[in-house]
Image (cartoon, rainbow, N blue to C red; front, top):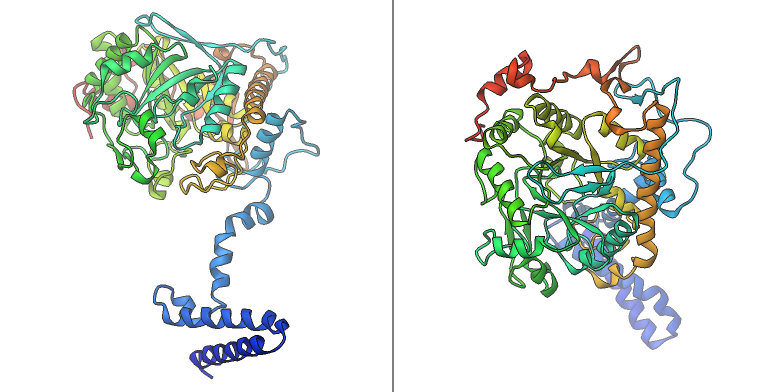
Length: 527
């Protein structure tokens, strides 16, 4: 019997049952109506042309699409082990949740990880451990050209825009930052009332769209920038060159998402699609970038100004270092974003294959600044999968002065890693503009969780450093972090990577750096 005959028979039986149900007992409806519905569904499956599976397997084929839809949940909750999930495994998510709630974050019975697997890393404990400091150290941000330096915490909220995140999520993040005394990066979506209302310290991020300080044509508006940068909550300004999730491309905000509130915050027309170009209009060369940073510093009244990037070409970054030397000025900080990606939705090809991972990015920026004799005036922030005290200490060893966390902070306010951030259907109300979904996130409950998570993670990092015999992050050294190469071989970061001496590029560049340093041009981003 053909599939069409089966469907015709099903429809016929369904219709007969429906007729019988009308003229006889209403109990017939319990069998007739579902049978009729399945018959109609089967007929539709055979007639439609979009899904080949349904044409071959009417009705039954829908099971395939249902299972595919819930596959991430099945994988996360029933299949993956505690330590092999992606982007964050269950062990990491659990420790964030527990610290945010203020509950016990310890585990019994030893590690589940294979410590002899290539790539495994560990920090070196000391035979003479120290007492961890009771007051967390802070990092002074502000070079010689800065009139209002800022003391940055060791761990802060990384860049996440209002629009990408719900109003309640922004309120909770900033409320936690205000209570805990750490900074909150606004993301490139502009300064909203939700960033300002709780009173937390802000790093105002400005991207290629110049949201919140743009003209009608999308150019940079210096007057509006100066007015907003003067706000007391704005402690630093970060010029976003690129981000780890999608370095080198811009963004599109569909007009359907540009409601009146977002339009006001971003200085864009309501209901119209907004395009962020992949490049800045403020500069097009390394020298112009350095001058733009200096100009923003003056417009802000002398507040710390820096830039964020996902590292690509070492030669191009060296060109920026040369421009700093020739112009006699430098950014107060540089945030290195890892190519591992982040909260921003991006094409898979970019998230998986474009941009240097955070380790290589940090090593490049740190060593370039050291070799150019600039490291003492430029602070480095690290952004990319920092969720535990171990993560933070590793980044400090690799050259960072402080860390920023985005996804871990989202976990602290209730994110469950559903990975639906770009669909407006976030089940926990974090990454959505749907009022009904966002309402689920209670600000009074979540803001203290952000504070507790940051406080516990920094305390963990300080305890780890104390076990290594260190109380000041500046005393961490590359030999204190080791990586397994194979089951029988391990190397320290001091052995694995080349570490430049202060001013070495100016005097006698090492062979591995000489060609890039020679060809780096402060007046051109050489490809």
